[in-house]
Picture: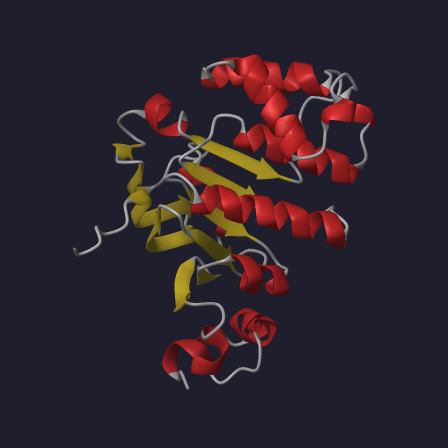
Length: 254
């Protein structure tokens, strides 16, 4: 029997974002399939955060189409974003609420069924049960990162967007979190779009990577093979080349 093709969780076509005469994102097209972790990489200013903000509906594209789980974001934003979630070190939860209160508020927003038991599950998943009644504002940066990830998993999203998800974690905790995210992507029908400046992490976690440079996708491929294809010894060396010499990579692959 021929296996069925992977289902697209995220489809981005011809995405553009203009700020006056400045082009932040230029005709970007890519997809994230179910059971796949895709790395969105590039130097600061490459257009990663702008792209993610458009996928999240925070910014309106100047042109292009975004579909999440087959739903066009522009036509049905509530439906599309209802099966999406997001975590980033700069998007902390309200510090005056306890961990449980924060998760309950977001669970109600997302319409999570059996919310109390689901909160217990994510608290256990990220080793946060002991902080259940602690105000988020007094948690350490690493603990707040795990809280943000627990929130992001709460509604079992079809599309999970992660912006530097392990930046504040010690190596042991980061290893455990990466394992949990891989398990999440491998089960069910969800996909993950992951940004990071940690090339070791990207190579360990991501099935495919997209390198953005000056608002365009410059390179795409398997993070374990892409460096050699472009004459580089490592993914970090390739990242540096994308940041410093993008035209040489675009015109002269190895």
